[in-house]
Length: 178
Image 1 (cartoon, rainbow, N blue to C red):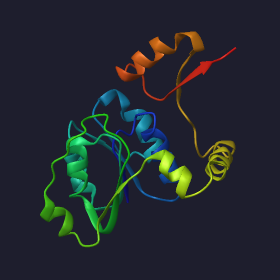
Image 2: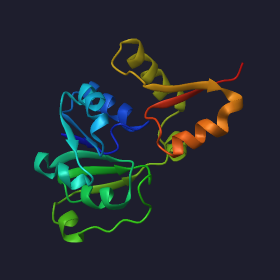
Image 3: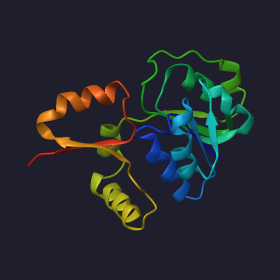
Image 4: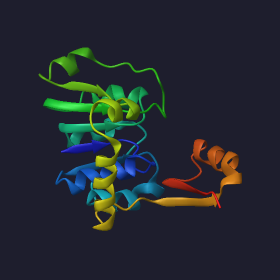
């Protein structure tokens, strides 16, 4: 069982698809009803709707939780792991500060929190080309479908960045250089 918070976001939608392609039962968490349908497609109808990640607790415990929100979502995630489970945190789009119940986390037994920074992974885990080749193969096999929400000329980078930060769209932005 895998739980992805921020499942409708630029990274979350890919995380859902990658976990499903690996054979996991995936639950995607969204805060807004309008994102439910897209996330349901990637998660096989397992969508958790709620302002807080605690809405996913009845579906747990989870072997893996992927957290891009930080804040209260990360705190909740640490209490929803199964024994030996891992929470990977890689963003703070909600909040940089996290409070959590220590007893819920260590009482699980063997639970881990992993901080993922892309640049560290590329320098110490494997060369980028290996992962990019895997992603390209998954896209070719239609097991990974990046959601391109915006395409714009490079000269509009400021406006596109503002819209992304303001969460005016979900998915990825493609900027054309030519």
